[in-house]
Image (cartoon, rainbow, N blue to C red; front, side):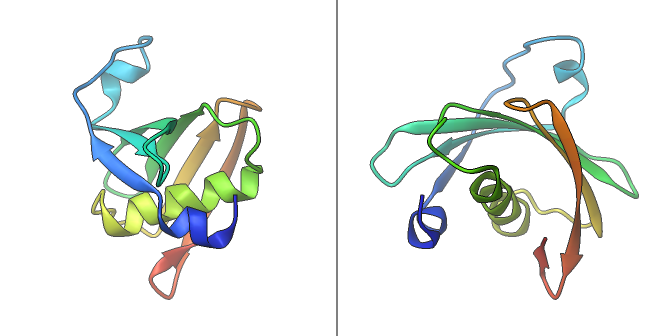
Length: 108
């Protein structure tokens, strides 16, 4: 996925789809759709006063994890209304966690 494709990703807030007990604690649910209308992921957002969490289930094995991080950053800044400085991201694909930090209005 190129930078341009990441910028054109669309986000649709959806009704909760409870996958497991952790999902029950999520406050926002989003589908991530490519410019061509293909679903490439589902994000669950967990809002806390000092740090948010995001679980990302992607359906795009051709995407690099760095592309997924950029997509989540766009979701947080432009759609989810994230108001905290740090966000813990959990990628279901690799079961890895990383902390994203807001730097000059974007998350890295």
